[in-house]
Length: 220
Image (cartoon, rainbow, N blue to C red; front, side, top):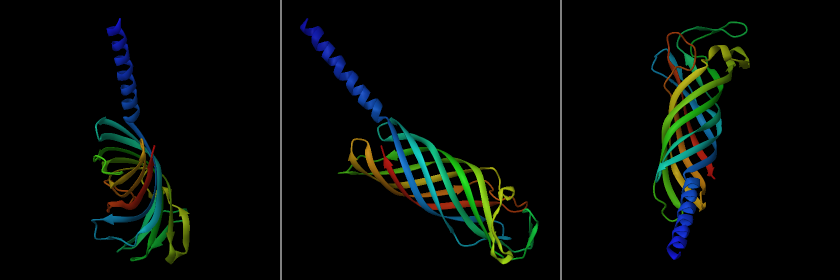
């Protein structure tokens, strides 16, 4: 009888510990990220000009599978852009076709829905702080875009037909998590994104979009 009681107590303790571990194996984060975006191209006819400010807001789910290692995914809504110019005269197919002379600046603003899939690595906690990194791939869906051409007095005109609908890229995040107790933590880091694929429809030039942001978040 005593052994049975001890065995039942043991099972209760194990089940409670398993439940706690199960709860801790899934993490949820909300992040907000002021960023700078710019365009890049290996084509000598295309020049990336100055960066443009943007913003990234989203949620991340982390599924821990071994200690401090986790698979991550989520959703992000990104508004970002950049400035480019061409060395040759080009024709922009807007509502009314517009001829753009060489060196004239084109400023794009693009909205993305991003679905990242990555691997998170986190150090053991030292005091209240742990260091983390997250590396992965991003499937971006382009929701829409605007273009400005100051030299032609074009301001915030719809640019959807100039942009591709899908873009694949990668991200690298590094930073620290400051524990507030339990699974709650303040997150501070730096995030870099870059597209593999062409973002702007230009037959003879591959143009990619890069972003660098201050990663601010909260773990629940």
